[in-house]
Length: 426
Image (cartoon, rainbow, N blue to C red):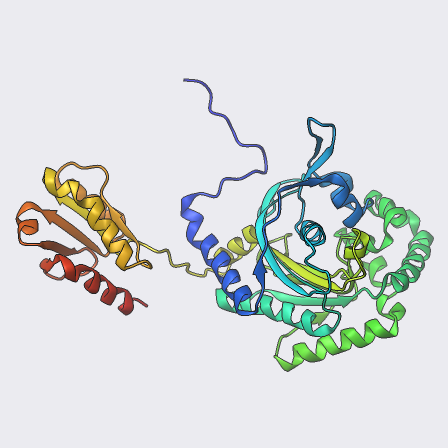
């Protein structure tokens, strides 16, 4: 026997034991998006490298250090998507989705970044992404943030806290960038190598530094709010009023800048103190210039993305119980002929009860062994097909979770009995 092949570092398996938590997060997000009128879009995992270098920014850490980029057999530079927004915009432009139209879209799937793997941060990670394109006002900013707040409520999460800021227009930010550059240049001897690199490329990113030695320097840096244009101030003030009207708590964080070049005006993060260094569980903002940057018309847009792994970790950190769907019934058979009917009876039940989980025994053996497997499956009932019962058109029903007598039911009453049990379930 040869050596087992190990997975690539940072590319993790999601095992069946995690399925309930993942399904809880994904289904809750899907239900909320549909309730708000957002439609699903699916985009490729592979895109031309140019898409990300033009949208995310040549000087960002993602483009310079973290993208999985290679040449295909035709010599074209191809990249595994590090995020979804650029791909959604590309798909919308290619397919005419934004031509005199507004779009509310969402997608989910794996993203890829080459960075040091750590808890809740992997090289292949999964995101749920939502975008509203073609809406200029703060109303849609408020709607998107409210949707994320609704998701935390649906999941029972209490620790996420909302951080907000406005980056203003690119023109206002350019003036602020120069002010920051002048400020940090005067204390250049106090900067670490990473901040020195950012000073030339994008001094706003120094404000994101996690180096504790730079805390005081960053606190004393010029404030972005002092450089905002009037329209951006009006937009941001109205957003805050709308959030107040629906009782969403927030903190205005003037140091929140986000790491991608395409952001403008509103930016936000939901952060938690339950995941160690990986505090952000959902991040987003406006990218009003991205559509035109990628070849379309000037189009306002905003979106956010959450990391599924981080939210699943947070459910565990907050000790929230995730309910797993267990079989309502597990079918077993005693005898060769009854066994040949297992599949047919199972399918009839599934057809009548599409929301129920119905399992059947696929191993055979003694009735005692089959009932042990039924019990281990977590099913509420074992349905026993025996020759005598079938001759009378009946099935024996054994409760596995309650101390009640075994009963015989007419074959045609099984679905009604199970439906009644489903309706009683919490």
